[in-house]
Amino acid sequence: MATSACGTSSTSREDLTGEQLFSTPFPRSNGRSCATCHVPEDNFTLTPAHVARLLETNPDDPLFSAIDADDPTAEELTFEHLKKGLVRVWLTLPDNVDLIDDDGDVITPSDRKLFVWRGVPSIADSALTAPFQLDGRVETLEDQAQGAITGHSESGKAPRGGLERIAAFERDVFSSDRARSVAEYLAGGGDPESAPDVEDGLELTPTEERGREVYNAICAACHGGGNRATIVDREIHDLAFPAIKPDGTVLYEVPATDPPTPVLVAQPRNEFLNIGSAYETFMGQLDPDSHVFTRDVSFPRYRYRFYTDDSRREIAADLPPAPPPGFDDDLDGDGGPAGFNDDLDSDGNPVAGPNFGLQLFSADPGRSMITGSPNDFEAFDVPTLRGIGRTAPYFHSNAADTLERVVDVYSDHLLSRFPSLTLPGEKEPDDDGDIGPPEAMTADQKSDLVAFLKRL
Image (cartoon, rainbow, N blue to C red):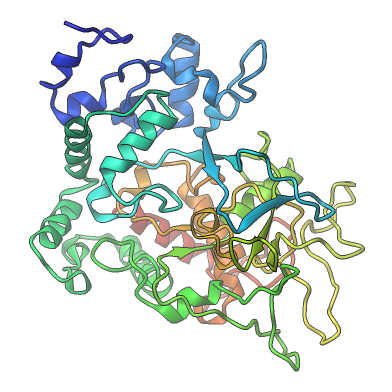
């Protein structure tokens, strides 16, 4: 009987259930299983606390493989990124995209690959959330499992039957019976747009009830539907998709309005969204005193050139755009607001990138590396919010360590840009010194929303 490098015979693997395969190291691998990074006792995520505990008690665990070391080529490996719950993900540039340097010169490597640091999403409720991965690059759970086996366990092609059993197990993991009931409704042929609101029957405290009202007013537009992960208001969704000029700056209406009005690009079939989470990562790299949880680990610094087609001759957009003269990135420590400037173009409109600020680099291109579209710059999947209270840290890069911080980011940096998403009430002063409009929610509204989210 043939035996793998990990001590499990090929014959015995055929007898394992999907759950057992999920927790069993793969043959001829670095010793990792699915459960190495999707830790069952931590709601199938990878938490910083788990990594720190494991590094102290068992530094030889397969989790600490060189591929996820801060520098895989170092003589002595360190794992500061893993300690933030981050793993290295390799992506291939689309045929119509190049990497460029600060001067706009092409620096694409010969293998056309780049890497990013991302958190490990839970497999719970995956029956409701196709496509998979944070950028939606995988259509099925079977393909997702194979990608993890190849990319994170450094193994080869797995038997299709084994992949199907792993996928079947993942489809049967839910954050709650409520989520399971929605999945069963949809699996039975139910109309996704008519899926029942299973949270209707929750017995909520007054605080949670107020939080549900906040959720319905400003969250459900993009986190709605029976799966809590469906764009239900395209008008709200498209507010985050400004038209981009070839230099990477936002196209505004002319003559200039007060406030400026960006020209929007309709996205009728796009389920992804740039909420500014990659911009949060960028800001954390500039400000060591920021609230960004990952501020003290380094991220790659990319700029991308998008072309109109695969010939790579006509530029569609350089992103992020080159900063104008006088751009203040606050690297000099003068205390000014990093990422913003007062420059106006000849029409009197702001000079700003897709995040409605300016940035020196992008730590993660998001969905745009799958579609090749500059409209998908730093856009990510809209996740289900069920079980969110048990899956910290948050965002694709683990930029927020608590749910309270997530709500702060939305209130201060995202929703506040859009008057239709700003709730009535007296707002507290910004505590981070940034410029722009006041927050979208009051302190009480934020705490009420957090209370409701923890019940989902």
